[in-house]
Amino acid sequence: MTMLQAIPGFDVCAELKRRQPVLASTALVFLLAMVPMLLAMQFDTRMINDVNVWVKPTKFLLSLAVYYVTIGWYFGYLPFDVQRTRLARFVIWGTISVGVAEILWLVLAAVAGVPAHFNRDSVVWSIAYSVAGIGATVLLIGMFLQARLITRHGLASVSPLFRLGVVAGTYVACASTLFTAYFLAAGTGHWVGGAASDLHGLPLLGWSRGGGDLRVPHFWALHAHQLVPLLVWWLVDKLGWVKARWGVLMIAGLYAAFVVGLFVQALRGQPFPFGLSGI
Amino acid sequence: MELETVFGLASQLAMVGWLVLAATPYRFAVAKTIAVSVGLVLAAVYAALMGSFWGQGEGGFGSLADVQALFAHPGLLLGGWIHYLAFDLLVGTWEREQAASIGLSRWLLVPCLFMTFMFGPVGWLLFMAMRFVRTSMMARTAEVAG
Image (tube, rainbow over all chains, first blue to last red; front, side, top):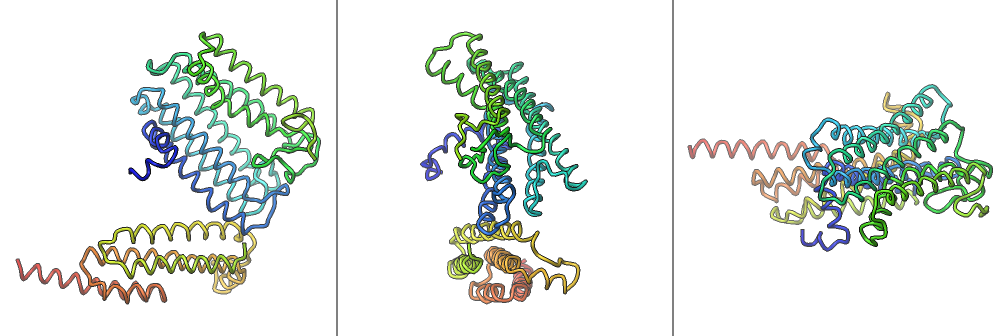
């Protein structure tokens, strides 16, 4: 153990495990599952939208790991007993189940070398895409329910303004993701103007640099879940600039406005972040 | 990455696992950790190969001709080879653990490990035979002592 404690971030991992062990180990499994996919990218030359077929499942593994770490961490703002309630067990196991199913779908699509999202080529892939949409909704319901639990049973030892920040951030994430993701899914692809290719996208994220990309507002919408509480923690607990509930709500409101701005930018066919075509 | 390179690296890695299992005394518990770690890496490589090439191969598991067609693809053939490497090594790890628990001499374990390395199931059969004899000996000793 002493050797492990020397690793940076060990304390954070131990704390996450203490807060919610199931979500902590699930997140670790999802991160480790990236290893075979990163290896597969070395062998597999097949492409979807001009990027390797394994890029998408790898990104989703990372994204889901971040999601599980987040809700696992937020369980620390609730009394431990709450984790045993039926609602909390749904938040944990419901989201894990749909996450696993989601990854399974993406891996099968990568093995077959076909697109996963927007794939209406056959009845089976079409149904799978629709079911995946329901699964994604369950992930939003999971975080929404957790925020409600924090409102009702949140620990008094956590500062009330920060708790409000967690709840407000989660609500902003749910509402804006519901809107941006469903708008995205209702179309036929994530590009607006620009080339229908992910070839010259932003590093790591892959967003189009030649036109609008609806994945941009979707990303920032979803990550209100982490970023709004982080901003609130920084401005309230660290800097002490915000001292009232309306201040916290304003941070959440401004963040929502930021997502709306990005959504408009994407719809106008302008690339993130500056609206200037990079290629 | 060239498949030939992957083949070479995987074989060398498996070899490290086998040497550790065969050459270290039972009290060297890290041997199991090392062998299992090698197994984990091989399994990840196997998964990557299958994910990459499964959709591109012909054939299947339905008939001998199907299997032959499947292994005509070099990526899937390499996957099949790494499957051997990984599972043989894990069986070897299990043999060593069992041998330690029934107090089988390491001089008897090593031929089993060697045969498992070379001919998989033959080595396992050999080990099962030795374990059978060894445990009947132990039962007999217990009976006499009782």
